[in-house]
Length: 312
Image (cartoon, rainbow, N blue to C red):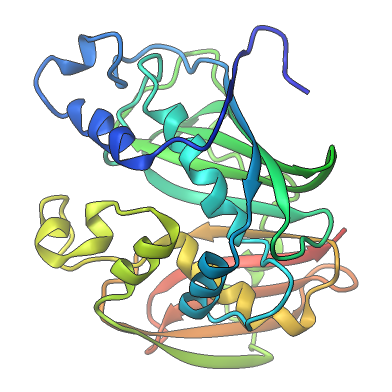
């Protein structure tokens, strides 16, 4: 349900990403943020919502996604796959001229996905995305992006992403700093503090991983695509997509996932490509069926991601 005062727009189809990237990049030009159609002019976070119906889950794209992220070629859709379908709507929100922050340089710090029902490959879904809460953060200001997917009116999937704008100042009436996703990540926090893992795997992350994931997801942020482009944004090498790392962890737990569950992650340190990473699974974190996990450097000295799966 759309909240009162929310500016809602129904789209005939999902927006194309290239024009949205161009509008986002325009904000880097001196004074461009003052133009009404360019994001980044500051101020409060507007209440915006976009939706699109008749979004088809294409089997070919799903198969390519599964191959990159380590999922079996099954007839059901991984919960993380719907993130890439909702991403164009989320990008359109951030490229809106009313958006107070430039999308360039945003950091994805937390993500929570809830699978309310299994989705068959080839299904046709209705997607929506909206802006959520704004909060102060020790490093700047954070805000939520929320998304939902429905089949024939039934809610099947929802997502909450927390984005950080480093150095930005949140309005005085914004939420308190350090807020965590609903349900918290306490199980994953415990896992990161020295508990013995119940299982481990070491994965290779090749130099072209960002380009491969970008090809199937549509997220072609320069920091993921090539070392030279990444250096322009302060990274010595290209970095892996955070949502690839989450998807790869979910794929490693696929045989343990219940039909309905939520999976929450906190992104800690980027994976510089190429790299080897160590996936760690921990026993029940907090209550029956809850599983904590972490993704570290192969040597174990850097924490890239920590998370938890909880049955509904």
